[in-house]
Image 1 (cartoon, rainbow, N blue to C red):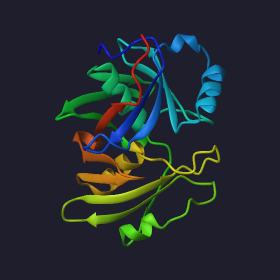
Image 2 (image 1 turned 60 degrees about the horizontal axis):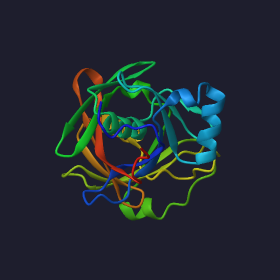
Image 3 (image 1 turned 90 degrees about the horizontal axis):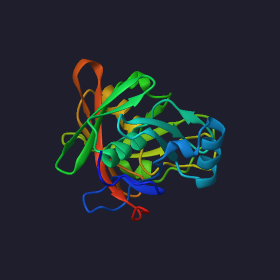
Image 4 (image 1 turned 135 degrees about the vertical axis):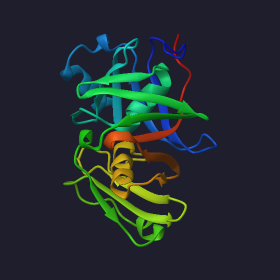
Amino acid sequence: MNDRVTHGPLLLRVFCDPNGDHGNVLGVVRNGSIFPDEKSRQALAWKLGLSETVFIDDAHRGVVDIYTPGTRLPFAGYPLVGVAWLLGLEKLELPMGSILVRRTDGVTWIRARPEWVPPRTLRQYDTPQEVEALAAPEPGEWVYAWAWQDEADGRIRARGFPGRGDGIDEDEATGAAALLLADRLGRAVTITQGNGSQIMAVPGPEGTTDIGGRVCAVESPTH
């Protein structure tokens, strides 16, 4: 287990750019037993008001539990990349199975299956400028708006709109939607999302997809 794991609360930024800027803020409860049931976990996630909050139930085995402000999620990309970086394990354990982890050149990768991702609408636009000009749609569906920045180079501009009506109108960075997009395109992509977060996604073996990014701590752990 990585020595970054302590007993205090922690905030991470997941999918930072190469300079360590941007990224989606993730709340991590490193001792999940403090919040022993779904009701107390959901209440904390609502109170924090972050896109997602993850509870670590077994730091040695990588057993985790993920919540938005309004619902529990069976799978989510950016929380798993963040926790994989934090714990330093070779895999994480979710109800649907093991999530393999690897690290290369400061990037933490997880391997998952597209069918694990909750429904998303992938909506392509002609230009990055169209994506940047979008207003957040009314709640109702999870929309991932994207356009090619450089198709030959695999670079994409995207924005994510969860549409859940829970106060999160736009996600700064979204690993699960990036996974679906790379799977649909059948190729490696580098996605700039939100204000400048960077997500990498690569089709893997046997119908899997790898999503990766850089992770930074927002604050020093409490010892």
